[in-house]
Image 1 (cartoon, rainbow, N blue to C red):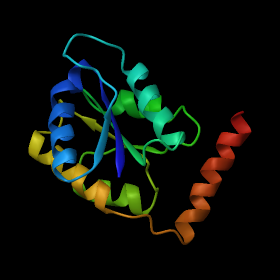
Image 2 (image 1 turned 45 degrees about the vertical axis):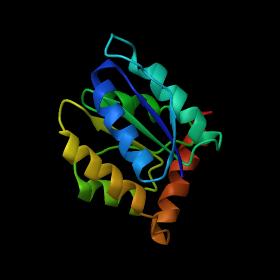
Image 3 (image 1 turned 60 degrees about the horizontal axis):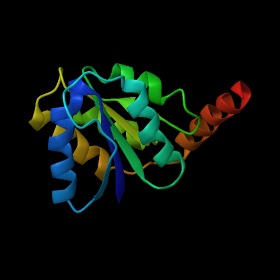
Image 4 (image 1 turned 90 degrees about the horizontal axis):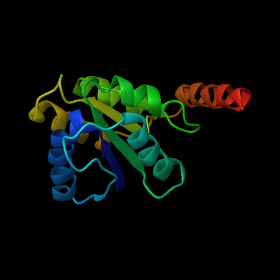
Length: 148
């Protein structure tokens, strides 16, 4: 799967670790920056990643900032994005099974590398259950259409 990957300065180092793990697992990676730990604005990177996801150039996206919250807030402003700020493997699994999350956000100041890589692996391996969860995803899409 092609994964779009982005981070701000606080998430730069963890993004690099995730990129290496994704490549090791055989995924294609579109690294959209940042390329250092110099201060940048996280909404810029959230938008870059989400555009590839909604445009079909990436199957999913992963965003990293200090807490994951800012990236999640920014990403969820874009139509078609269901970003989940996840801090456990259980939440990663449920975000895919129940919410069909297409963007994962992580907090580099809250997770160590081992935790983050475990979350990423579970999130990528888990599918959407559909069924009654599909109805809820459709309601989310309807909310987006009403905002336009």
